[in-house]
Image 1 (cartoon, rainbow, N blue to C red):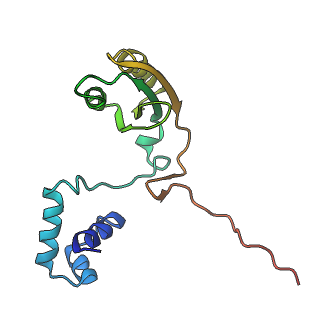
Image 2 (tube, rainbow, N blue to C red):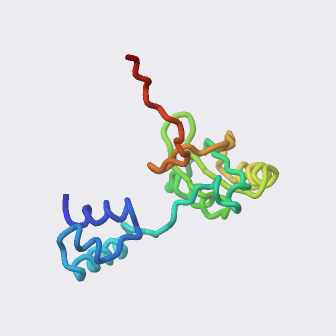
Image 3 (cartoon, rainbow, N blue to C red):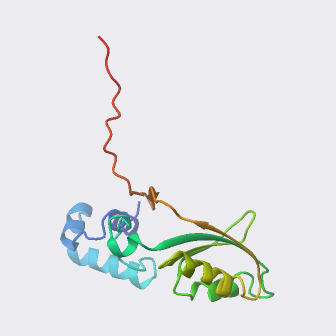
Length: 164
């Protein structure tokens, strides 16, 4: 593993690590660590530092409605899927957008304040875009695990009983 990957792995696990901690963990000087991190940021490898928040414990996020939408589109000549993807990801409701293989082309994750807002976005903004052939909306009910982070607390004792 090269030095960039080593530091990147540490930051993926805990972006709050100090330069001093990363320096000690990698046996590099603080200046070397700063330079590598600056390089990762400048090269667009590190795009953002963010906290991962459990939506069920955050009052503001708890009442939000999230939906995953499967979209079939007609790719544009000379632009393929990129042009329509750009029109979609510019909407503030869109939290994630993926090009997919299989039965649909794009997967969009959106968020709204209520069910009506999400439904209105899909029916009046998303489905009316030129090139959109069909949409299929799935509402997210509960998150158990996302991006390698568990959102549920396992309080049960899963040990098997011992019989004598």
